Amino acid sequence: MRVTDLSIERNFLYNIFKLEKRLAKLQDQASSGKAITRPQDNPIGAGRAIYLRHDRSVINQYRRNMDKARNWMEQTESALAHLTAVFERARELALYGATGTTPPDAKAAIAAEVRQLKDEALSIMDTTVEDRNLLTGTMPEWRLARDVIVTVKDLTDFRQEVVDVFDQLIGGLESADEGVIQDALGRLDDGLDRVLAERAENGARLRRLDILSEKAVSMDIEYQRLLSNVEEADLVEVIVKLKSQEAAYQAALAAGARLIQPSLLDHLR
Image 1 (cartoon, one colour):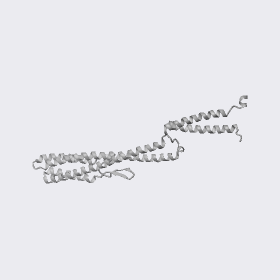
Image 2: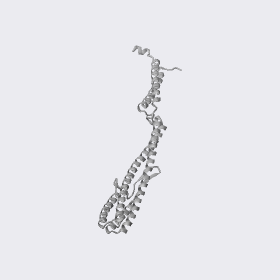
Image 3: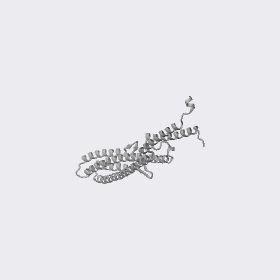
Image 4: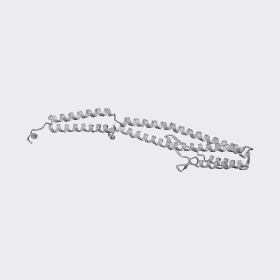
């Protein structure tokens, strides 16, 4: 079978183009550090990378939700801590006012301070965060995982209890009625227990947030590792292949130069 010069040239150019294409792909991988620069480079790997990126974006959204929930719960803890201090001071005053040795004018002065404590307690109960009531009303919910939704407790009913017990204490102090003061003191103890119980429950929610946050960080790191395995190129391997292809390309050019010799017409020109 006769092989013409045209066939030799066509085969030579075809092989050169293939080598140049491989060189270009390896150069892209070496410069970008990515094993997949186009979906057609590795359709299966590209599809897996899409799923991994989606899963990672979901995890990152959960982490943002956790940050919002943590901010709300930390604000709740701060408010309840201040409310605890108010109840403890009111209890001290109630104990002092409940004794028969406390004169009426002193009880009236205590009542004035308790009235201020009541205003402070209501101010705490009406605290707002992001234009929403922190302790009362409809509480926000946060999705922290596929099957985990967290919220906080509505303390609207407790707000009314706060109003009632402080009003009772003020009334007892102003009327110097030790029985009313003693009853208010018992209700203050109940209210303080309620506040401490709410703080304990809120602390448990914060602890769970810590656990979920650690888990989300670990999952995000794992997704990054999996993405790196799929998308990132092994630079040592790429450079070795690049040098090999460059050598093959130079050898192909040299071989082509020997095969396609100048003809007689080239000399006549």
